[in-house]
Image (cartoon, rainbow, N blue to C red; front, side, top):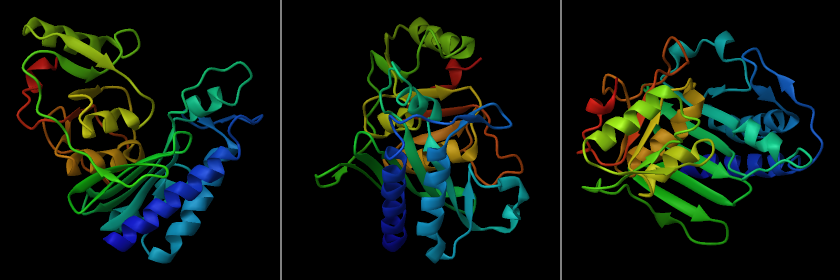
Length: 268
């Protein structure tokens, strides 16, 4: 696994460099079939990752590939990739007068038998990489040694929930109200793209409800990091979020750091 992790780390960082070559520059932004944006940076990152991972002999499922044309159901093992997660945030940083945090990521996961067993979430602008394999999770800031990360026990009082009361939608707003009805206070935290999951993985947040649509490549790498750090990513039925489903769209997902956190009563 260490060789595959090194390969994925190299691919993610090279893709990050390819993305940064376009960041802050004038862009051509196309709309995909689902109306999400597509830029030259997305495609350059996809090609870079595909080239880096080709030598592994493991099939590649990428958001910027053609996933529905592939015989993926026969794959017991495959790479699941989002070359640029947070394209809208990326475009903001390349628009005159646009305000951007740089919180877009490169996501690479290795899926085995429907579960993410290796994950890399790389933040090109910040030079930060979260990664996991063999049951261990790490965070590395550019120029420094990797540091092991872990989720935290849920506090008795205030919970930190990755959500925005203004933009998360009515279901998440209702979840926050139910938490407060238990006598807990809620502190909100937010970051872009897959970094929302990473806040839970590194013990900066306790719970992240994601009720808006996602696809497998949006969650796989971060789920590997969260699980290796001691947490989990579950469906509404409290099942572990699985991969290589008939439909690549995910159901609503709920990311938690402490296995003892009783979060299901908060759902509608």
